[in-house]
Image (cartoon, rainbow over all chains, first blue to last red; front, top):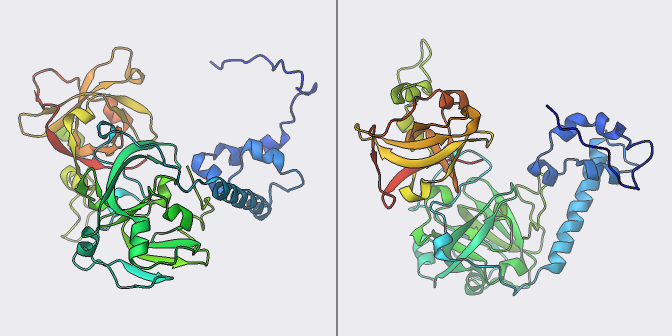
Length: 264
Length: 139
């Protein structure tokens, strides 16, 4: 039995009621809304009201408008980012084991990396571009942090990661720290990129361990990016290459319409 | 539905005329393909068991080892299966973990609801500090 709500008592409610025609015309689209779709640029009922003048049946117009909003959001996030402000940390008792798996495909499709042949390739504005092996990475000083992983899907967990401080790594390889972007390529074809200030944040690392054990295959062995200031999908797993560049690097998800900066 | 039947229910039979070598689709093989990870039994107790659309099926009450050495999660069914909730045994092979929840992977909600009531003594409780393996899954 439906619960009947009394009409709104708001003095601002139009006397003739709220025009439902836009909603009715786009009911199928609204029904398909979920969190991911909102971030990918699908319409929300609120957003529809801001598209006055747009023909909401014209997908390109709408996508263009939403991309403009998304780009604006990225700029605002970059402006308010505090490069030395630390994200909250947590206690070891709050760490979940195992970590929560996620990817743009199912767990059965994970392809483990061959440790014996894996190398981390470097390119772009980097002085020493020699490729790194797993053993090379393990020789660097280790940093540990217990932080919250936040997913764009609306869930989170407390995780414990250890690895190489990313700023330290960039300094070791002679990267140009005045460059704008760091781009990542991954063994599964995934690509990501972050801004240099986020890369230099004290809580950005190249992680090699979770809960003090070497990363297992589903969680990015042998190397993944781990930030404390960005949504989960920015934390690329199974890294195979890093490039320092001033050219904006498109990523797997920016091509899908996701925000790029993705700060938390 | 018995444990054996539940595991068989998720098995895909080979079609007629199929080549001799077909992928192993046994519950154990499917679990193995999901990169099982170490987990403390105590971490699982109290978790909500969900189905594919995130609706709750019940809550994990304990983890037991059957007389045949298999591991079952003993789940208290949610009220959507009836006001008098009951305990049912779900084999670990059809379960995946996602963070702080566990999810049934190879049986439907209807099949879950049809599970026989678990009776104390059908398995021995595994201590909370023991480590077992559990498959991974995602939302």
